[in-house]
Image 1: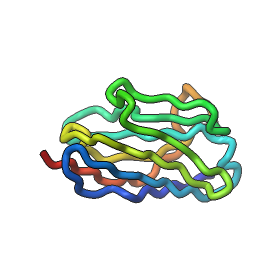
Image 2: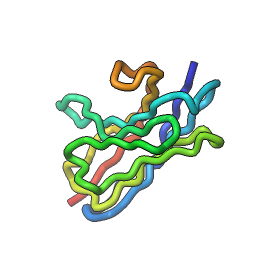
Image 3: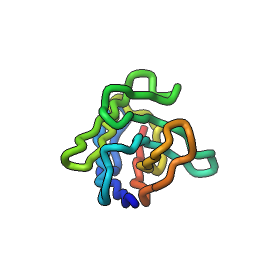
Image 4: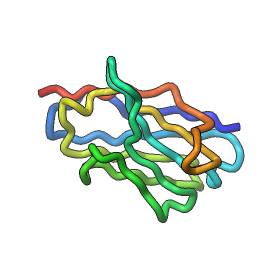
Length: 119
């Protein structure tokens, strides 16, 4: 079992940057594919970024357009989402998630961290 806890959200002006962190506990963290998702009020949850177990392969949602970078530190059981050039439409709750079966449903989710971008 894996427990996930996000941090690093907050209020930032448009054009600014934030770095989200996801701390994991439990065994076999390094074997999980990790993802970041977001959900804005009244909207469906959407995929923001994903990273494979080794960090060699990363994936991004279409809306990212080169502004976000996902990374992981397996020894520290941490996953990060560096977000730059933030826009008001990036305002959402951001969630960290883990799956043992890439491409399938995610098994574990964090509680989320709020990101608010002001114009």
